[in-house]
Length: 112
Length: 116
Image (tube, rainbow over all chains, first blue to last red; front, side, top):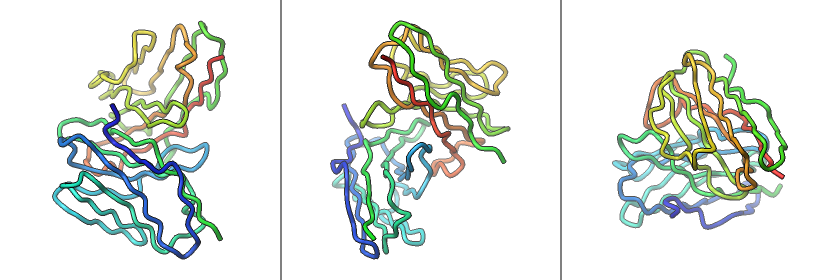
């Protein structure tokens, strides 16, 4: 039973355009959400997070939006750059539980 | 500061053999986590140590997996006997304090285990 879902295995975006990665979750106990970026042969690295008390968090070119009623979050990257090509994982945690529940990842390719 | 170190980076073993993966966390990090990604699937939590104690081992798949963290420093994850479905990438992460935003939560590069 997958509690965090990333339904798009891959996404290709032209350099300079906006990349939008989507994530859905089913567990109502999740109250903190994170995005990780992963390059080949490396571990995931933290990108941006959002608490369930907010609906938007922005950090430079990266913005995460949270729609709690739809149990949906998205990561916007604008403008997209070649170095953004990587696998992006959505993750969630519930208060009092330190484990992270990840999605299956979306491979983003930025086309020069 | 050295990051989280995992070795070996790759391991190929035959079904039925034993393999031990090692994780050296960042010095001073009391929290250590093991995760696993089976080919193309999600990264799944295995267990969480606080110092040498197992805080949460709810993700351990079965009793063929044994994790230890003697002395609260490095950790080992032993698979005995290995089965084909154990193939995947095993990640270790460590953190000093538990924060919700996980900024201090650092992953290692992983060990790719292939069971043939």
